[in-house]
Length: 201
Image 1 (cartoon, rainbow, N blue to C red):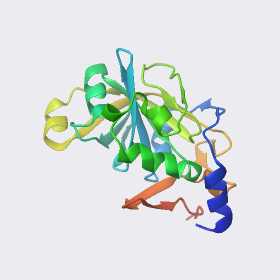
Image 2: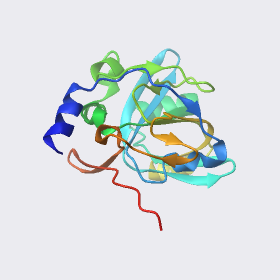
Image 3: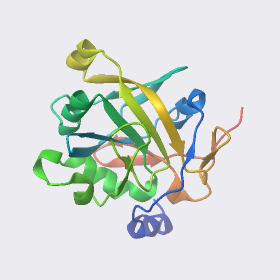
């Protein structure tokens, strides 16, 4: 990271974000470039959030996604109990919060959102919260594939609502004006790449 970008990251805090609906047939574009996501879930007054690097779109209509979540995690238990979750796409500006969400268990804190310096907002169709300050959000309902979840920790879901910050995604396309707005791509051990420049073939 450049020193300027590092300063932007250090000064950043999740803020309420303007959201616009994304046509469900184009919801796959929010994940197609392989970003790390924040997975949030809620059930019977409990909620949690975790980071997940292994996720992908699966279908267009209806849109479906896959995400690998260890079934031993608190988030995994909440997803299995509620049948719902949200994928939020965080920007570079939230890298420290993403690392925090990936390195501690919600079982060890009263409120992991607060512990990680994250703010939440209500979703439109599911009980799981959105993570404020992100670039895009996919509200998901779990598909009944218990064998896949049990054997591979692979959760499949249908996207029932999709949102994006119009400052970075509009007309079905990503467009980043500031480096701190770019999405994150986890490599290993807390190291990330940021989304690069678009190349038109």
